[in-house]
Image (cartoon, rainbow, N blue to C red; front, side):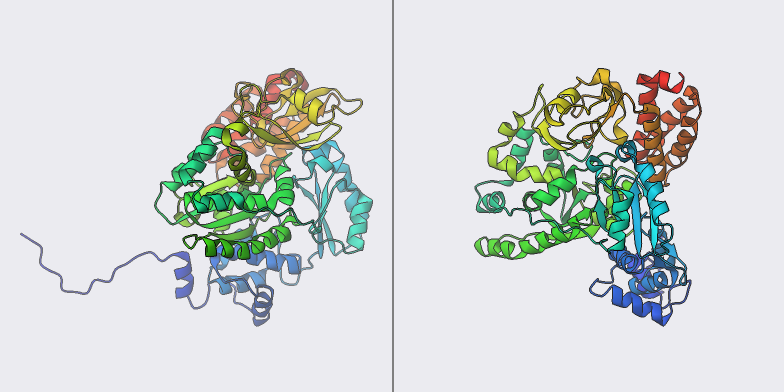
Length: 574
């Protein structure tokens, strides 16, 4: 027997999304908004659309102008974006470059950040920090902070005065820049333009999307941000998904020892953008976000200028090829969070939230920005795309050594005569890289140890200096090449101290989302300060962090500890 028919009207119940919740609420819960705060926020954020995904861009406007984020203005910002005050506060308090203060509190006009990560520590970064604090102690309008890597490892010790990077910094140069008010971004020269020739070939039909992917496959081009995933496979996977499809370009190189992306972008932004446009046309991307780390202040106006300069050129291509629909390209600014180098955390940040890594599956190729299939790439990978198409993938692949394919950019710092970004064959060894490209070891220093892939890649002894530096070659030694950040250490550098420096970095940069990483990094820091390391306890922590952490930060954080115990046991009393 069928149940009796209910003639009452049925009102569908569905959860409201974040924006709808805000729209349905006339007055946000929490602190009431003062008219003066609302007016100040409106003035500082003029020109920015009041969208929740632009929350971090709004916070930058306030922080840049005020030197901090005032609680009353955060309440006004929540009202402007139709967000809860909790949502705004949790984002504002997550990122290192934002400082939340009370409305009446004094805020510094300038924040000086002194790098104390490994390369800078080896060059006297901690002493520079102490001297800078002493020299500026009488300035209430200046704050001096310890900072993680700021991408100037080859010019250590480095600092930032406001938005001005200071390579080879001294206490005197920091004080001088602050006194003269030279705290804005450096002016970079315009990079040489390119002719968008490979994009033109693609639009004209001289190249097909399938042909482009075939060239990437022939080149064996891999992601150059750290993971080394085959580029062609990413493109194929995202291309096969239903639209709309999006793209993100990861320019948030926060790995200790890495600075190659700064050089690539400062000299080759037009080629990067052509790579973006080719990828968008082949894969079918409607919208591409470029996520730039906040420490690269000088790159931001330059890159925005290059994006804007594309508009008339793309319009000309549309007139020649009426079927062409270029993607919308949008520049986003990071806020000092190493974790946002992880692609899903970066996507969370683009969406206006804390940079917390997502659980996988699904991978971002299937469910990325705003839930859409997303092609995520490091900018150097995209820089290579036009060059590969011009010369042919097979020809590029043949440039490697020892059966490896293509060329690699290595960020080399530490005890070498010529630190910097060196373009070298894939498959090169550390010894060859130092001798052939980095000018050899500094006088008085002999090779003792090296980091092949930044903080995450482990620490290897000089005895392994003849192992090829490439993807998949270092795994048997408990290390990996990652983003190819090579830090070279001499016999006077303590490997124990280096590992502790790296673990403190991981402890500071853990997003705190998962217990194995949040608690494990802190416990390892404490254990590493003991005269004799507790091997059994470290084994337990390492295993738990590798197996249970959500993302690569917690999974790779034990690498320095495990490397020291494996190769330098005498230095830690084992």
